[in-house]
Image (cartoon, rainbow, N blue to C red; front, side, top):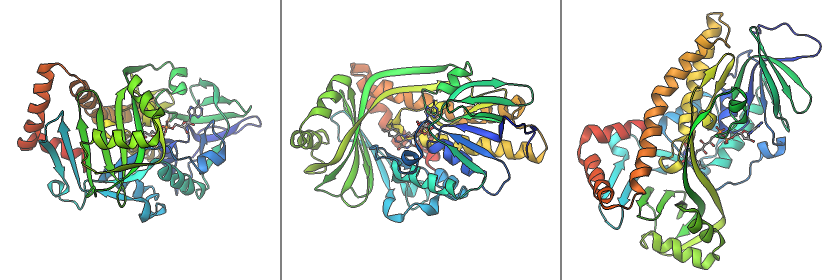
Length: 397
Ligand SMILES: Cc1cc2nc3c(=O)[nH]c(=O)nc-3n(C[C@H](O)[C@H](O)[C@H](O)COP(=O)(O)OP(=O)(O)OC[C@H]3O[C@@H](n4cnc5c(N)ncnc54)[C@H](O)[C@@H]3O)c2cc1C
């Protein structure tokens, strides 16, 4: 399929994806076995994309995300040894020992979800894409300019290459330059906090339970990895996280142990600590003529509810289906009418999760007395009112 006539000066692809992050590559892999030619452009060198560095992110995946990774034939590339299961999640507030819990039995599955380090997901997505003849990676390149014509889009890359394509897909992260180039702005919320992530070994077993402790000055979370290892996530003010980043290991280990109320016994930092600013984004539009945004470029979630990549996968699944349907109907895939179906479907899924997550953070980082009381009430309310709890559990299915 190609709606554009090839000329001497232009390389032609049906789809050009800007950004070879997990979403960009997963999207391209969704066209395996078709004759749709896809270029994936990234500013990073190929070696870094093929062998991404550890970035401290342990990605919690829902059952539906695993289904998508299986559908695009990536799951079988990921070694079982790197996958851990989350059987239960417990949410605690302040100094109270009462917890809201979500259990795998409530969704009638063997676990609530899966945990895989981000660099392993990225590495295996790249491995899969390398085996697909219709995907070309253009590395060390950025999009300098883009011109959306009636019949096709023309792209000029920083390496001098000119590309003509039916559709440009931006997957270049939450501060997407491509989205801005297309004149699409985003709702942005700066929480003025940082998140530190690291892996720690601990004395007591986690029993495959994930914890979220909403304390009054910081949020402390743990994600159960294999053996007695957990991904530890601390969200706090920029001043305090900067102190934590610089703290010597011995002091840091002690600090983490006590911030979990010594729940895990002695804790030991393994490897580095990584700091991320807490800024969330939601694009005001997901599409325009011959253009769509996916992944964090569309919705940059707060990691506290671990939905960013899960939403990214859901979004790319929707867009792939819309494109395949358009091709079947011999319709131009760059038409706004085709892309708008993707926009409305993703919006229906993403907006409630985005708003609920930001709402949870507002409430659970507030230290005023009415908020403290509401925080306690909500945990009990969700725990005891079945339909409300089911709404949360449905997201994990
Ligand atoms: C601490 C932390 C924990 C998280 N935990 C979870 C979790 O448990 N579960 C979950 O579902 N999600 C989680 N997430 C979210 C998840 O990591 C992101 O949603 C996901 O990485 C987004 O992938 P992406 O490909 O859209 O964007 P990115 O990962 O940002 O990739 C963007 C790519 O675009 C490239 N790029 C950028 N600019 C340009 C340009 N101008 N030209 C060319 N290329 C460009 C970059 O080099 C990069 O390769 C977490 C995030 C953080 C920060």
